Length: 165
Image: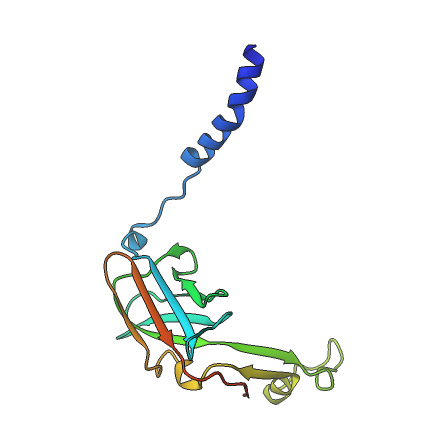
């Protein structure tokens, strides 16, 4: 009887030990992060697979970012590890690209001289799906102010494009 009771309590004790004993402490500089969810749409349609970055206006501070899901939503993380963004004003940049290897230009011998920048550029076809005005952390017209508490914002990046860059 005691063995059965002990066996049934063992998984519960193990889970309790994991949650109590292995908790990761958040460094002080990341304790004031505010939960932030941004939705990116193109003409109202969710944009999946876009990289979203928040860059502090004025250059000082920590950036935050993430990648949109099928609903166009991204939950932001600071330094890719800490959920949320620090309070402040940010420029929002949005990038969605694909890179395809050009088989004809990808040849070359292993151990040979390194490829020149022109050769590396010719090795891939890069397509962008977001208007370039939104892709620059310095030039994007999108801005957000993160405030204490939960932050939710939607941005529309205009018409879908498919442009080789």
